[in-house]
Image (cartoon, rainbow, N blue to C red; front, side, top):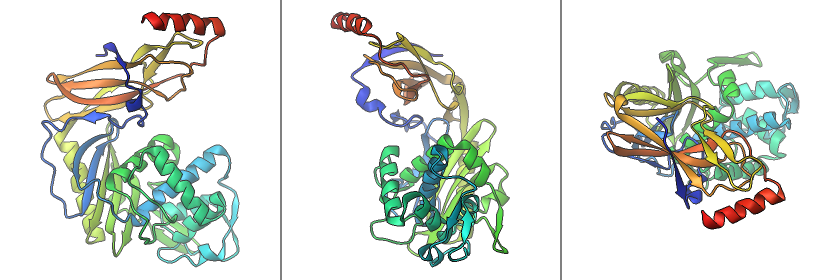
Length: 383
């Protein structure tokens, strides 16, 4: 299914995250459903394709959906060893006094990071989230700066964070598309943490049990996360992820009028995606799509592929008409980092362009020795 060609001068277009299409056709898509919401977006996780959307780039208040970024930074701190699950965190007065939804932390007493994470994700506790932000950043203000740096790194171009919890602020905003980018990154980069926390239906702390506000965990067994949010200005919001068979879909629904409506409309959107699109697994996780030529490196080629199963969504009945080819970035110069985009897979349906998707280096290629670099320099003059 893969044909290797070279693409010169495409490096600028390959800095996007893997799984986010560089180009995706809107041709032949089934009409999107109408939802009772301000903004919504449905994403095929395996390819990053948009299957349905409405006002996905409109800047809106995210409310507690903000906590996805707080969780992302928390998982990063755990991975880097800067934070431990059994680490005790002293509850500051600011965290203790945090308004809105709460975990009901005790003032000045130590609380395990593991409990704070559950309080943030399951109970949507503003006190737990503030305590984690202070433990990681030193202060919530410093943590907010970390949030904005991470948002820029992830490609969230229309987001601005001013706090860790999502409490209203005129300069605290994002979009459905940016939230989808964040949610996909969290599942992709921290799959074990996602599975560990986001499907928990209830958490008891300080003799108080609180249910997860994501009603879809009870309504649909294929839903395994993610996060709810609500303020008067934002309305009722929900990001949900569902896995049926090899496919995972991600829905973002913002600005509904009630808890019930956000659950119903999110489920309607997920069902639309599963019922109206077929999934085509073009490449398995870490399967080499092709060997790409590397210049001035310790190795002359690098295996290119995807960090997760690459699953393309096409309208029902078109699965057998999908073709794909690998287009490499040339010249690709060492050093090449593992996970670096090194080309694209170009998909067509019935011979018509469907989408271009970044392909990653599956291994690293360091810079070669002096004479090898010199020989490749001469070769490039004539290439």
